[in-house]
Image 1 (cartoon, rainbow, N blue to C red):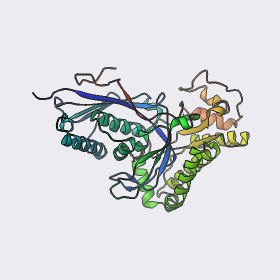
Image 2: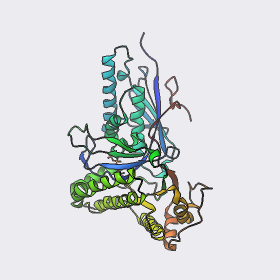
Image 3: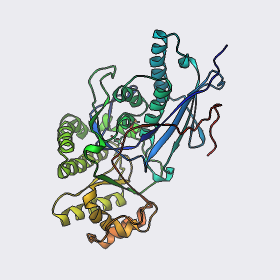
Image 4: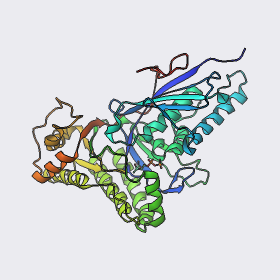
Length: 391
Ligand code: DP6
């Protein structure tokens, strides 16, 4: 009898925010980077993608993906590369053990949801591709380690390879042409340094002006400064950052994080024509972090920016009252502020004009911290009959 069973598996996957930035591809097709990078995985209590992958020979429409309730295109080269890689790994298992159901030949149906609003203005491709790859790997019962799966997720979106792990994660650029050594590896799990917090100041929820993919290509092609960054600056920052994380040295972690963000945005400004991701609100957030550190007499907060104006401030739980207190005039008025958050008394006074710029420009905040990698779950977005679950 033909096998018409619906097979399914579900996972969640986290967002990560880099403290040593990936910017530049040496091979755009395989998503091979020009430099290594390092990130902090953020807690899935606040930011995560939940994905159910299923397959069945009864699916008649080919492969499909529903994202936040809307049909999403799966014909793009990156999604196709992930499907192809995972299918070939499953097919290899089926070839060895012929009693296994032939899942590799069945259409795949994916349903995926973020627990954060699109209005959070966060690039969700990292969590999205990490969840897609992990969910299909679970469905196919692949024995691959997170590092091996990161090779696949990387082909969906570079930064996604780092979301296969929790905690503090490096993406080693590798040097092989086939990309087989360009993968993520764990530097330290979340428990190693669980006090790490992240305050995300959402300055814009709009889709970015210049996408990361195209922005980094322009930088590679036109920036002279970029050569210095990939050959000298990043290798030194990677080494310093690994040491800072391993030694739980926040001052060092913070300095490298800020220098890295500045260096990355400097290469954007050195791109011809220049790319500007930060705006006046971003710059006000930098000034506020500088005021906090000046007042503390040591570095207790670090800013970082990706390909957009939103600011991520890293700090340790022990300094929460100072950091949140300083931003309190802004936080108290926006969505996402967690009422009852301890100690907002010892605020550092920041310049009134900074406060008004931040108040006007920031619409939402996300208060979160370091967290775990993908988690297999029994929560399904596709029912036993293969239908998307109504939510
Ligand atoms: C600035 O991973 O979004 O966030 O590989 O083209 O999908 P693609 O790019 P993407 O780039 C992220 C760039 C960054 C820095 C980082 O996350 O390391």
